[in-house]
Image (cartoon, rainbow, N blue to C red):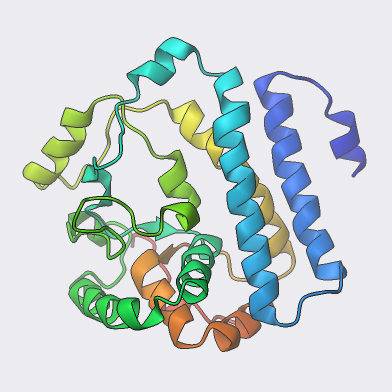
Length: 249
């Protein structure tokens, strides 16, 4: 808290520090504040707060450090879904956000079979970090109109990812390139993820699994037993081990 109070500058570094530290503190406070009926409710609350803070960072704070010329060069638009043709590697909080949204909107019966089929398609890749880059399956949450069907609950990486050259994104898919690097503003991408980094630091210090997970299978795991999985996770268990991304050998 003392460190947070001292960080008063308005430069990028100071603002980043405040964003990360404030989210770190807020996550810790949620564990100390009564009012959640279950582990699932607590985890969903943390995930929702991180997504809301990320949205605020994107809409209100990031533009202060990105010139209007740069923002105009970002070519991403609704219906442009080239970046959604791969198994997304996300934080556990990102998977919780999507699963909670699906449960609250009554779409479990629709997504259950769809995610089971998707998980089978990913089995040959063994959730290996590098191996997943050679997979070009459409995201299971991408609609037939090429729009995200869980947009309001989408993970942080989806909120931060952007491209300054739409043709480069299309070429990655058309030519099946395992090198999926596309031109973007790396500082902007990293800045959008600052609130999540603070939350992850707090969860890690509390002894919770912080490995990235494969989005589709992780959401399926949560839909099958939302409360059980999250109770285990918050208790320091490895509830997400079977859907965690395996690092390169």
